[in-house]
Amino acid sequence: MHPASPLTMARDRHLPQPRAADLCAPSPTVASNATNALVLELFGRHPELATLPVLEDEKPLGMIKRHVFMSELAKPFHRELYERKACTAFMEREPLVVEAQTTIEDTAFAIVESGGKALTDGFLIVRDGRFAGVGSGLDLMRVVAQLQAEKNRQILQSIDYASVIQRAMLRPSQEALARTLADAALAWQPRDIVGGDFYHFSEHADGWFFMLADCTGHGVPGAFMTLISSSWLARSLEQAGPRDPARLLGELNRSIKSALAQTEARDDFGASDDGLDAIALWFDRAGSTLRFAGSRIPLHLLEPGADEVRTIDGERLGLGYVGTPMEHAWTNREFLLTPGSIVCLCSDGLIDQIGGARHVAYGKRRLREAMRRERALPMPAFVDALLHEHADYQAGHARRDDLTLFCFRAPSTATP
Image (cartoon, rainbow, N blue to C red; front, top):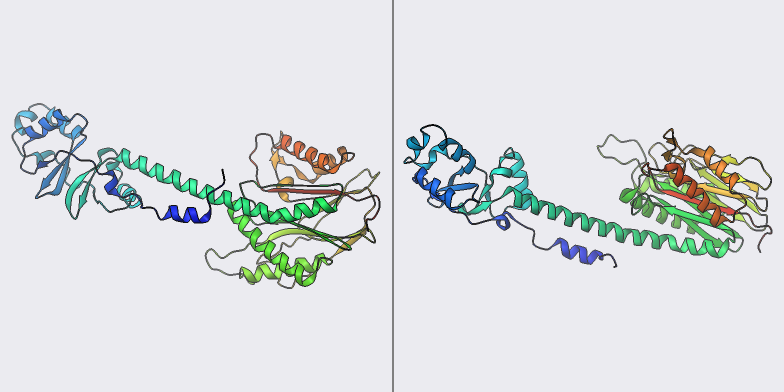
């Protein structure tokens, strides 16, 4: 089944909202001069009746609670003393009274503010001050639960629809990657339905470009940051091209700081300090060279015959954050990519995941060990093996963050 469109959800939000009138149940009433004998008779005839409204000129004066009334009459000689007296003797003089047009939400708040007694005792509903009926705390809780379930359904539908949009944005990169690299694999696993990681891959006549980014947060806030960041990346690529990763990181840093007004520290409550970690690669086909710049995301390189994985850490400043200078310049690093070398990039959702017998982070060391063990596999199987080992390590622990993993093997010959 397709998720509801935004137009459908907008229409649903404008449906009539339930009011206190929807909880209104008819009830026997007594006048303020009625005797307790009449009250006793009414409670006897209506065993389901928990409260009995007391009216004066059709307006609520109070409410008699069955359990209080019966308890009082059960005391020695009280029935003989009070049976012929006015029912106001055992009346609750300040019951909760709610106007029929009050929203369910405001009704619930009114009950909480009244001390919560109305949840068990019920409350009186009026129209223009005149008695209309009795409201039950149980009925109110049922409607509130239904409203919350409906709100949750609408929120989940919105997030599901956002997931469709987010995955559609990533699809061109997936297709370009599949066309361009013969032995590569990419896994994108948001912690929630939508995520704060994104990637971009594009093919060019003389090489290819790839960026992996890990935005602040996860879920909806993280996904919102991916929309901002990926749109600014697309603009930077149009203006600066893909061949200078360090320049692109600088452009992205300035764009995000300006867009989110994070150019200087502010004392405003709720002022944002958001950004992303990222690594950008440019592979030059002619020279088989890999040029890259990183912001808090490392590059892991395993060369043919090497006993160890080489980890090249990214620079310590993230992109867009208040503490990152507007004109900070990242540095390109470049090396010849030996045919058969394996390059792995991942967001910190893989490295920082808690698990194992000691309940500590997975860490870079375990990733490097897994890379060495599985190096003979083709990249799709290689990535599956790494993720399987990671899932085993996580075991029963909750997923901490979004996870993106990109691995490729350098071709044995440069492709024209």
